[in-house]
Image (cartoon, chains in turn cyan, brown):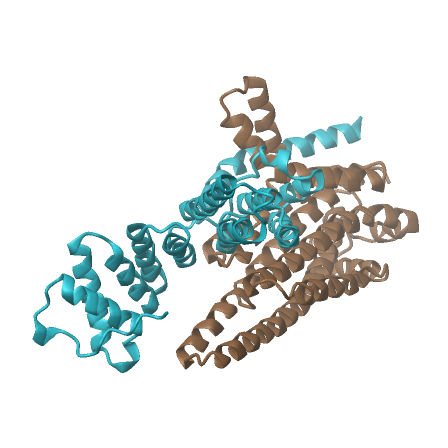
Length: 262
Length: 309
């Protein structure tokens, strides 16, 4: 009886302290989340996708470790070319740790480059009809884009993700205005000069004259910096832009446009 | 001046010069607890830790450097968390029953040692064990991470030099790898692991003051561990969810009041992703941990002070 009373007193102490600490903890939790330092509690929807052990581990504070384990499984699945499984695993890793840019980058790369290359080059015509092949290539390219776009909602200032999306729009799903936009953002985030030149090269492919002027200004600025900044593609595009923008002859560069490769 | 010996239930006349609270006595109990736990060969887990780190650090060499270093950090922090939680819950759960079994408890309490000093000393002993273990694991981890990071930098530089890269390119790649490698910010994560273990140890000590068996303390300790981590999920689902009734909300609030929110101490994920825990946040989290420790110790004292041994 005496010990029960003591336990009740202990419970009362814990409860009173609990009432006092709850608002303090809520404020601290909001601060930690506001700093993007911690993601919200694992979503219940995750329970359907993770094994019981993985869910318990993620819930028990081992979220990053579970994500790394799934990342290794993604890598192993790549060898089997099981693109559906790979997509599901990529979805899990990115859901568990949406602020790790490499997960978005790799997920997009597997979808937009590895899976599309597989269907374009490794599956013989006898196994797949051309229409289905094209549809699969287009579908996996879109999935790759979707991963990067979703990643950018969590990491809007990720130079790597902007660069990956720009490359995708340049090579897999040509769209010069979009490619230019993301090369520019990548340059703003990373400050790497070749990214600004890539931005200019994409602007050259656009149809609006005001974009050509921006491209000309950028490429000319690099050209004027000296020999080391004069790339063959820069000279080629400057020649094109001088014609398009009717740049006066005295202001035009002296180099000849490089001969296109055969 | 005659004072009464503290709260052991039987008010005994204290000897002249006897202090009601002595850090010296607490330290003696703490160091003997540390020795007692160390003799149980708990440090053998460090061998397992080194094996795990070697596997994580040198097995996945076909991945990108970010992924490789992330896996190494995840395995290291995951192992540190796991070992410190086990030490906190199991190590603390066995202390009082073992002292009763060995009759050490009676020897200590027959001397003018207040029961709260005994409890604080025991807790401090476990915290010392967890602290030393984490320091050793941290040193091993940092060493391996630094080694792997330098190997990766050398690898990247050799690729770049073969491609005729400039000094600026090499410096930028070095900086990129270093960003994912050993840095001071990682120590914040180790400290947050220690804080979580400290809260769990004090909770386990409270449980063991009224538990009928060691197994009960361990099972309940781990149950509280999972409830403590699931609180955020319960709050999001029941308090913010549209389809929950007043009873579910009431239960969720009751759980939040009684059980600790251990997710507050789960700051490792952000550190692994490359963020550093801001000093202010670390200070506040330390304050919350200290509050839990004080509350659980106070509650443990109330139960233990009247306990018939």
